[in-house]
Image (cartoon, rainbow, N blue to C red):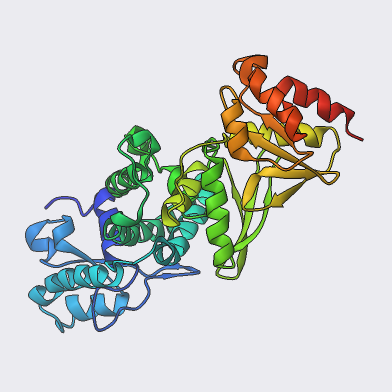
Length: 381
């Protein structure tokens, strides 16, 4: 007769299958408590006859149900084997919901991802093997639920034909990671092809990712407009190292960094805010940051138009033109005494045409290249 040793990968699959509850549909008692677990691994066909420690021949039960099956003969092997099928159907029915919005999906996925993050950071990252071994089954169970949730709602994720700009790519990576995580253990973990993609926690608002600011100021303005309409917008802070939005979702105030790329990208997708780039947001933030370094206060004229600010009751308008032409200036029709700053600095002083300067003088409007902008800001009192 062979060893009774059960392979670690089989154990991991059993934990994930059980969802943390006794597999007997009439019992369903919780197998994990604050003090530990009461898990017992039962062989469907007796080990003494088969020496079969496969996933298909094992089931997780509470001590009472294990005794009733093995010693009291209350259940047949066929009944217990069917419990595995029943549990999978229950899991599918519970988490196979197709949501209408990403916000609905987020409400279901957020607590699972948050619990996983807490377990990983408190036990695995701190090399607390004893507690990691104790709580890892919960992570496996959560992953199984997340796999069904996300697979059933793939249409809610932002996608792009270039995978480098696609949140959907990270979802596929996460699903592959779940499969690998369930199938690997111990030293094998170091050889996993796909680690947990941090972008998942980003797009669900668990933890920000270190990304880059998406280029379109117009997209951000449109997002603020949509958030305002739904009473979710509170504030925006720009002209700092990590600019951010302050929003309210489900009565919780949250800070959304503009360089948290997966989350911002997902929000643009959810609110249908992708717009052609007119003014590059990173360039605008750089200019506002320069103003702040000089201890000068500014206000947005309108939070839904980040390209216009007020300094000492004087309007400053930011544009991004390779060369500001007379025609473009006429189209803008700026108010008298306005200041127009061209953030496009690749061609130095040539970014404003001579005809535009002449028209600006007639309009009583000041035009500034970036070099002239720096000098102008230095003189503000």
